[in-house]
Length: 410
Image (cartoon, rainbow, N blue to C red):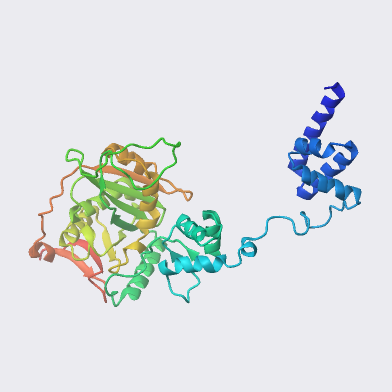
């Protein structure tokens, strides 16, 4: 090949690369057509190779150049009628066919805007092929969206059992108390125990990004290992300053464990941040180790109030409303996300995952491992309960009360 031809070929390739970066389809078509017209015989194929276009596209551009149709100011890029015809035009009955296929597995009210089906996209695509239609799974997904279908996960929306008759009033009272405590600079703590986690090389149902086929290999059965056991993370979220604290218990989840977790929060965070406060507020669920019926919880809080010299204002969430507890979606959800897909091999590993949890809003989490023993058989007697200096906050005093320690002997 002559040196001039080599240089011309290089120039064409450089022009083609530049046109792909800065020109739209119409401008590339017209430019390649003009160059082909100037090149002469065989120009369509040579220019098409340099520009990465189909020779027919270059030919169309050359025809436009020869006819003087080189106005690039028009909004239309492709020629009228260009591009693939819509599937609905090629197969007019395909939407009706999709609806017929999913009609037997459809959920939701016909009056709703959103419906859903449990059939996979591939299954619907195969059924369409049997009916004589052509549609891949991606197209089926778009058609389902067009006729109002989706594939959502289950939503915890319906309450099990009857709602507490004073639920709304109790929520208003809790919100008002939180506002009052925050305005006064007193700590507000949202507390709860996260579900127990198995320690060992077990599967974690969440997922993490890893290189392809570089799976974490875990045990095929989730049987607890006696020497490793389980952990019960008791979480405390301070609404005032967006800080979290987790007491990672390795024994039973009892009222004594819950009260000890609050005690440890005060020693590690509370005293430094709220040392001048004379009282603090605890928002917790109605059941579990810190439930409103749990006598040991109240007795242990009385011991804590006496030790710290503070009033402890306790507000229980109405029954069946634990998902509104702030500790769930301000602390626990981020901890779960942080150890997603990772096995909790030992207590130290679990503690490290918790302590490294943070968010864009600068959530900071402190944690401690609690290896103390908490016996399930311990019960608070009637005599012990009678000694607690407890003031009920009516009208729902079972769910809201103030603990000031113990009654003074007279």
